[in-house]
Image 1 (cartoon, rainbow over the protein chains, first blue to last red):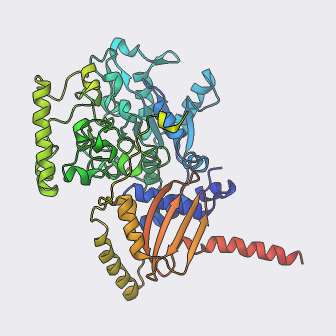
Image 2 (cartoon, rainbow over the protein chains, first blue to last red):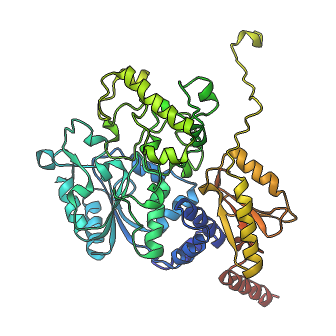
Image 3 (cartoon, rainbow over the protein chains, first blue to last red):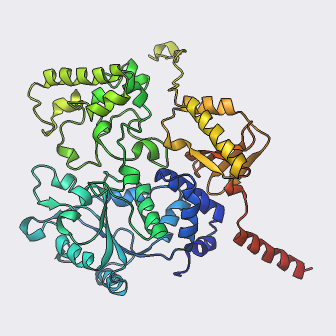
Length: 359
Length: 138
């Protein structure tokens, strides 16, 4: 049962070429050189499956939905064949004491070696009483499980940065995993929900290279979070040409022009939606005509209105260097127009009002 | 009720803006370099098309320029993959689809034969076992 992955896959009718194809796509999504797909396939084919414990805290199960409903059945199966998922409340058949025993056993048998995946934020208010499992607080369970983990993967914006539970006024005192655990390597995979393949990519990297991928300053894998949505957006050429949609149903919107003026947070949001897309590569928010909400950035819920244009062009120096002048001028003009209209928009941090939504 | 009663506004796409960004032509030069390398050292290489800011129109332009060659390989492995030689021998247009038919990744490979087409020695060994089993049943 714990043999090399390729044998497990072969028993399920997954051929080597299917696996190679999958790895080529994965390598492409991880921005690895095209030839890396084959190296990854060989390493992963021979890898043994690590034990994984998945703990859900203050969350909506959206992250689990995102992962389990991704891809076609075969590929989804592959994700779970790469790991030995020993505890996952939403997916496991066991309940009650049996379930808790499964977690305790996995922690004991694989002490120091298991991967811990956490989704949801951890409430610290009233001694953590806002979210308990089996009579124990989330913070208590997290500290115990983190002790023997080789590494922790914080799935989703809540586990990574506190997410929506942490939104003002943060009634439960929600914090992120990295606010509590300080002595273990932590990978943040933010997003609301996170992109499923980022999770697969991190696991593939762990299996291939035996280490966690390179992270940015906010603890995110650089391969997926190295560039902004804006940098990789297929509508970027229109930004550079100064062509913007002014409303959701004008000529510009129909022609697929840049959504900057409609509040797109692409320029300040680091994520892979523009390249990986959603729903098996069908589309993604900007492609369906809506600006990016910035859901993979810390405190995105409190970062001004979703439909308000960013007040200054992101990284103006870079834009001046790379974009057509008219694009940059367009951006500045928007910012002034926006400021005039909103008057009191002093900072990026203010509550979203109905007026913002109806803009 | 006639169709006129329904307020439909038909928008015909205006010609003159085909959505070309100008990002595709430089790829031809990169391909030329890769083909030179293949000839000189036999080293295969690839360009990951999904990693580049190319619009569908850019891809069409590129596809159109490179044309179709003599060989078209279709691979059925959790969705269809096509590995088609272009009009330039050694340059292959590789497209992977998932089971829903959506393109998951797209490459231009420069190789005498793409890796994916070749059979893996371990799989060949399994094939040999099958053959020997067939022979033993004769």
